[in-house]
Length: 183
Image 1 (cartoon, helix red, strand yellow):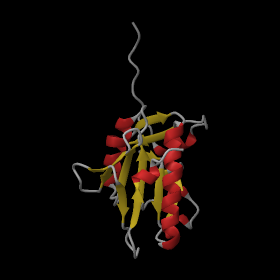
Image 2 (cartoon, one colour):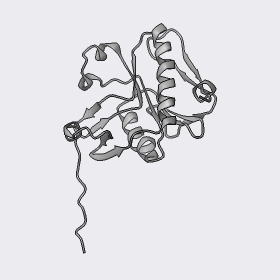
Image 3 (tube, helix red, strand yellow):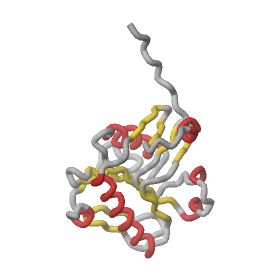
Image 4 (cartoon, helix red, strand yellow):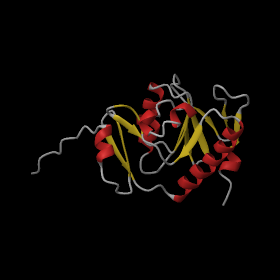
């Protein structure tokens, strides 16, 4: 009879020190999550939405959008890599992920391998740190959960996404029909 494996409390520094194995490594409150390479549908949605947000930010320069990247940490036991994030220019200008702490928008596209991680673990973290808007995209169902810091339940949409960040003079409106159009 084998000994039970003791869980390891994983810090942000431990994640940063891991060798690049092509997987996405994250930790929230010491819980380590390893995600495989996203499927093509996931990448397509991230690509399209990043482009649409980038076009909006060209006219409303409140921040910069990053798709499939980042190393965002709000403490020693959290490090997340959102599918899409928008950060303010003042933090991006430092050119150091460690200085990106204010996220204006976060987007996660659900993966079949870890929906609990995005829907619960990361959502609680984003709400706790005050991310003003968090979208969870279900590409298979072509719908989006819209979360704000104090929400106990999401607003769910299958028509459009709306974002009116502080400092903007117009609203970003993204058609889900356009986002999920066939290739």
